[in-house]
Length: 216
Length: 216
Image (cartoon, rainbow over all chains, first blue to last red; front, side, top):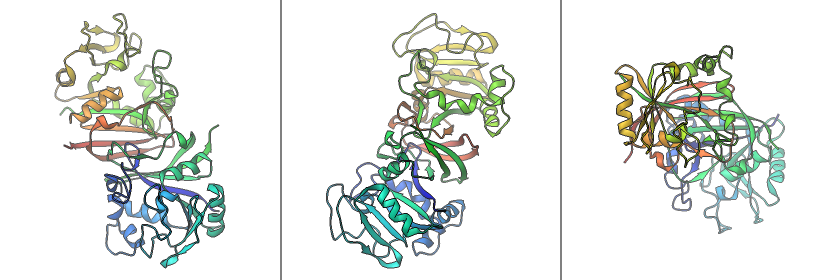
């Protein structure tokens, strides 16, 4: 059965990106500190077509979160730079062979033709909201594969608050960014979360939450 | 050797108390949700002179955090209600036999005679800052016992930012409060934290961080 899942690296003080995100700092100032653990892993490197890296508990988590994903959904600010402009020639941050290897549905208000990239990634632009994007992603994934809500923070919150997310897997990085973009603002609502799996490493604490139901 | 330690329950969105703390809501609105896990444990109940409760991984953590504590330090807002008033007749929130069973040093700007309570707790009021309070607590604890920074949030942040804290043990409760008092604001600085122990339960994820050094 399809599960709707999201996983994201978060600082101990609750930020998933640093301040002043934009073309100069795609992850925000200091945001790269959230991802140092993942780029060291063998799992992440293999998934991005590279060799080497560390085999570790962290690496197993990177394998786990990419397994069985049949389609992805992302917000428009994750796909494209800046918050105002919409550049028809923009082909994403990830080069000609993005690491998704599956259909990606991009939430936007701007209609655009689908983009077919190398390695199995297609970007399809969905203008009629999160439910429509989820319907399309479910259909693309099929009944046995999962849908990953890739981000950013606002998109994850929208699916969480709407009661559409089954699983939220947080990689809690022991840094304090002080400023930046929070994941769990009041917009996330008041979901009932149950920690169902914890993987500890010297670098990160990975906690998988099942979303049991949404209050109110 | 004396360790300077703090442990506190924190919501997944980073709050250690709900909004509008005061006499009516000592823990802030919804703040009791942060502590439901602990009052169910056999360890916490025994420490508070009660019987019963659950033997569990959570209970073992409550035993662990109370072991070997020779003195406590707390902020003035943890000791007394309200943020403006200072009531000379106030004897703390915890009745005549508080659960500290050791000397407690209260940070305040208002001199006051020490208060001796039943069961080994004394409240001593320290008006010359966090270093003086720590010196007094170390002396009271002796060389082989630890000093616990009891709270509140601001006091923990002060010791963390000053590089005086050795260990921060967070009990991460899977609730979102949305509003309230944060622990890890910019005032906490940018310490280097290493997760050294994780205890997982269906209710809480306990993560113990060593403070390796303080940036800057």
